[in-house]
Image (cartoon, rainbow, N blue to C red):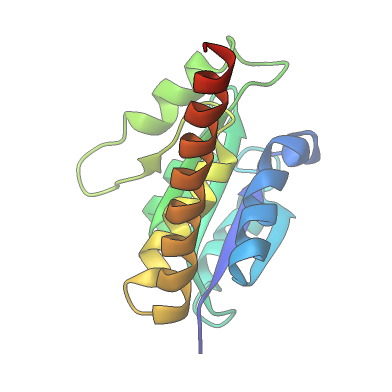
Length: 165
């Protein structure tokens, strides 16, 4: 059975930033769960969530967090599934830089792949690429996405050429 992706965030206020991950996974036909799992406000729930990933068939975590941004690192510390961190530019962050640095500066043996500030879409694409290692259907969808992006660039150049003539 295809693994699903856990899209988690420290607060419901992060949901608009994390929603593009859900949309990208839907386009790829990849199942996901979308929920708040706060490292600071509900550490027991975070621990329970991390320990139950296998029984819920979650194979990759996309964890968004602002401010001190402990959630991605704690999920990586508590589980063996790959974790992709999304630094969130939030009301309590320093334009997202504190979150980015918190997520990217993990100690040895506790890796967290990290995307750009508010980069949830790319986190989903990275998750899809990880799943595509063992799933030809997802790989085909990613190949189609790359081809569509190439067509967009070709069209942009055609439009530029028509303007500059």
